[in-house]
Figure (cartoon, rainbow, N blue to C red):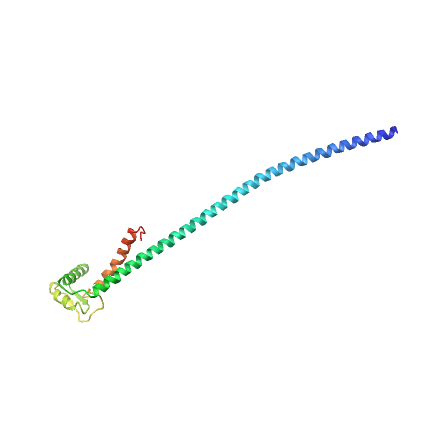
Length: 199
């Protein structure tokens, strides 16, 4: 019986020692696992923050693109309205010009157009073109412009004149049509600026 008791004591010692070693090993493994988890959690939090920040940046970028696109679309619509309005005004003006009376005031206008054109070319030795409605008025004014000749052929225009130097090297279109075309962009720009569209 005594030997059984010794055997049991030895077994108990071995079991206790092994249990202690196992417990120690388990505790060490638990500590390592907790440390690994703690480090992993920190990395996961950093990765999460990075993903969230990138998401916010992308969302801001998309929002700016949407706002920019909306602003551009709105500005384009406003510019179209300005363009349509300017075109409408010009169309009405052209209709009025077509029926304008060829009186003394009109004759003064034609004289001014001739003066501007010859000054622009720097010579009065020019060939003058006009439409059939203005032919008599232009002809009556040419006596003031020695060297200027009115050709028999007419041009299509609302009114005014077109001149060419007699050597054919220079020309200047000072018809009402050409003047309206030159004014159109300036008027558009002025209207657009008044509406804060700066064109």
